[in-house]
Image (cartoon, rainbow, N blue to C red):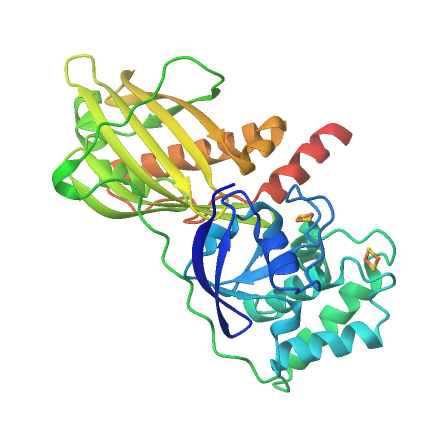
Length: 365
Ligand code: FES
Ligand code: FES
């Protein structure tokens, strides 16, 4: 098996190693570095036992390739040293009996510290929501939630020293340099997940279509999208996705093809999340029709396909709900932007946990 040389910082120490391209970060820290505090359980990105910090952000080490962490800074449960927040979280877990067998604890501590650092004053309900990606099979969550709340209370009283934030590495933007833009190949066959939506715009069809020619305006309406470079009908940037406890930053390339006579457009886009080595291809078709009384109806059809570790989530209907919600927010933002207003919807991608909750409510009335 061929290996690849990587260099990264693990718990403050520079590490150079040769790793097999398919080795995940969890195996790398456990087997090659002997840091067995990182626990592996499901190895499917579901249970959270393997959670470590990558450039200061909690990530699943079991679905992150070690080679994708070349140049990154990793913190495992062994590496917090005298971090005051982790010290307080550990003490609180001890005092509130927040562990039993301890298998989930390394990942739980990492997430608990992140909750304390990131959220301004979450209540118990929000803490439980944030913990939804870390499964504990023996202790139950009462002690864990109480432990986190007690550290949050110390923070609120100003008794907790907060560490300096760790700068996240900027995701590499995929695709060639400006002078050599390759066409985006999207095969017509295969399993596509498709979502349709119609958006009413307060503009006559020709005016609405003219607005929709602006690729930057269209991309800015997509929650989580950031444009880094834009040339005419082509753009590059990052699509940030928060899929429950999993975060992904897809480095994207997009191009727009227009038919002025038919008032239709097709945006082709492809991207890769470097950490999980997951690839996405999308096709967004839109057609501007006459909605009467100086208005227009825009019919949107979004097709997408995932390949790689995160594709496992596309087997669940939740991904369809997620994309449907993204499309709904996109449509609302498009309506506002087309009328010259600020986007109406949130700038962040929707939370899959909120969608899961909505789905359960639908199921049980
Ligand atoms: S081992 Fe379960 S999420 Fe990684
Ligand atoms: S303490 Fe045993 S799984 Fe959480």
